[in-house]
Length: 322
Length: 275
Image 1 (cartoon, helix red, strand yellow):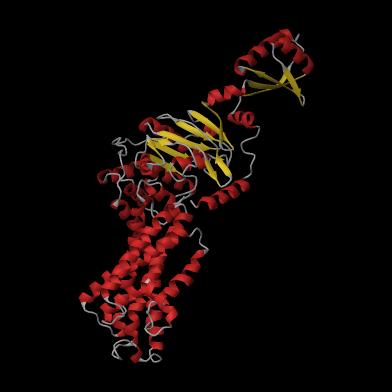
Image 2 (cartoon, rainbow over the protein chains, first blue to last red):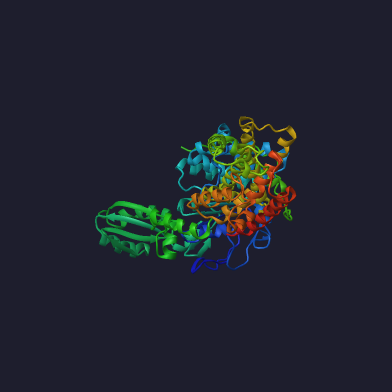
């Protein structure tokens, strides 16, 4: 699919398939096209070109049928702050035709799930950011969607709430077999996904499980300082067939499995180094998704500051009115 | 420290049904209507505005202008009191203010994101717009009823049947005005245009409706503006019921407003639906 705003190509001919019951992550910097993609999948934007099928329905010809099968939790709040939590949920039930006899039970269920039962009668404008977020998630679950879209679900939340929401999301899949499609620019969050598509400048640059993606960047990295770096380099090359480079007094070497290599190195060092060579500090770094992103795009994911992000959002909002 | 969850047990695993979404969805219309009224109930300030307007226009302006306006210029050859004459007009003012104000809430909803929740719901767009129009009409009618309470203060006694007819007519008038408001609100992208609306829509429509002076003797170039103004017919219809005098046949008032409402809603659908 492809999406253009005037001359700006926000999403550039991307193609992917999400399996049932999967947690699928869209990872990329701000402005990469994540939200645009999600908006197209949620029928809020029409694709410029391409074929999109969601839950078995063609998006362009049957948008209402698609809307019934999905739940969406947007990046920006979409609650009515003048209504109470309960009224917001009731409104959603009506709009999604939740059968009347089931409404009260489902509302109670999602309120319990999101720990909001005590606050159900309060108007949403008195809610904190985290409570609003939880209420939005609760609302998105009311009609039991097959697919749940989460657009940056935990932006601006404190770590405890983030952690909490992630527990919910995982339990949701276990209990409801819900397919989850999410976007994020937090690396640690992306680790929770079954598969990740890395998107940059409107293109998918990689799509795989987090483990496989990290394998691609290669080996674990060990950094150490010794009392004789030169001898250490020779020793590593001769006995372990490992090349090391010296950077600011530290030796950096790449090995396949650092957790096995390091104990072997340390136990054999006294005999090989003649008792004189000592390792003074040692650090193991395993590749992160950040490294994956860096390797694939040549940039860090969060190079942009928040200011330019807000500006872009504002511009995009002007462009599409929604 | 990680908090673990005790998840409640799910009572059923019912999923949304598949298959075609209905062409029209009355339940969604009801949902939109209900939400508008819930919010209306909570906004006490609007009720005070509904009280202040009749006081200002009817009691202060009406009784001040009364000596300046000769009764013989009014229809009915001097038998109609000026405050009685403008009473339906003041109801009309209340209706147009409330109707447009409630239609403009679409812009608020867009600004604060709630419109997205509505737009991704599996609901045909015409049902949403109809709910909005009915919601605005109900709110305006309720405000109009508040204005009705001022009738005895100006010595206008209305029989119960007339009251019922007036309330019914107020609903039809407000429906037409909200439909117009929905078109304006769908087309507007920002709030900067909000002041413009009340200056360039509400006031001209009010003055060109015959609400506070008879329009029979206006200059010829103004005539077409009066004839396309839905409020002209609205005020005329209310006046015929309230004091038994008017400029157009009642059936024509009704027909104009119904056709006008329909046309406005049809215009609103594509504007509302664009990305």
